[in-house]
Length: 390
Image (cartoon, rainbow, N blue to C red; front, side, top):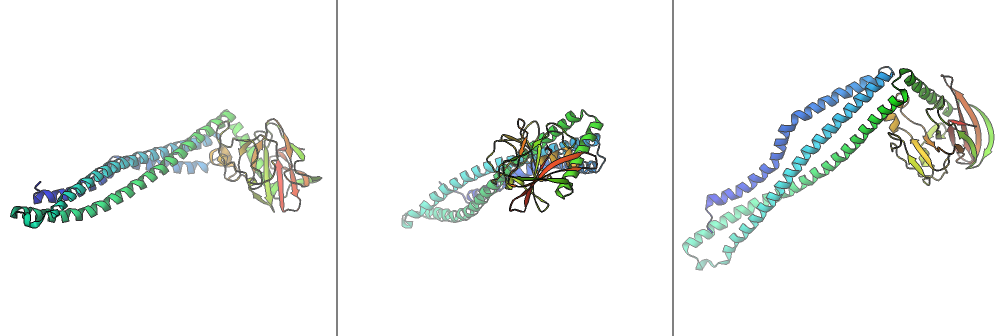
């Protein structure tokens, strides 16, 4: 087969041009179609972020709290829209890269075959060739050298394309994980709004009562940890001894019966999960709805639990789901213990041996919060048990 010089040169150049065009086509087309949409979403996110910040410093009214929920829900929906657009854009680029890699691989295979055919000329003794054959051989050799040079560049571009493809795939996985997290947040926000309306019946007075109870609880707990409670000694107890009962139902400091359990060292609250055993039957109901996970449940210690199994875990330690997603974030930003409940058994037990103190504190709202404190034997640790009767 005779290859004309212009044709051979065109082949060498075209393969590279097609490859570069395939790689850039997806980015340019998608950029033109999506730039305006992405800018609109970004502007809306900035707008609603400012709205949320403005609402956070306004008066603690039910109306304002509902507006916060609505603004946060819209903000999360916009972020979901933004992430979905990024996924669609990235998915299109990956499809273009897939097609480019396939075309490039096929082109490279064709070039290998052509290179092999051209190189076979070297196996024919030059003395057996006619002048026309010699001229043909020289032209083939010349084009063989040019194509081989282009092949090295082609191989480099193929390697770069494969690397880019894998990076884009990894980015897509991260975006899909981000989207799943955003959808979970949106569901939690909608549930939190619905729960607040259900509890308050859209009544401002009931909402203010909720805030007052939470505020009174927070002030009292802070005072108790600081040693300002009124206490009387109750003797010595062993681990597992009953020391109190959880108050059944709502009280002036709580919307519902539960044990607030605190571990402290010299007035500093510690994570109870560092001490409590993982060997406990439980439900994680620290998130949205009737019972869904919100906070991590990961005890890793050896202490027995202060209530009988099975337990219902309703709020964790630190910056919790409730703080981030419900009205309690208006009252406190850090939960200094864990909330647990056993719906069929109200008994509260000491988790370690020590001296027991029965105490109480009356906050600014006049609500008396009872508690038990156990000063652990041979240790600088103490535990507090709140929302109880003794």
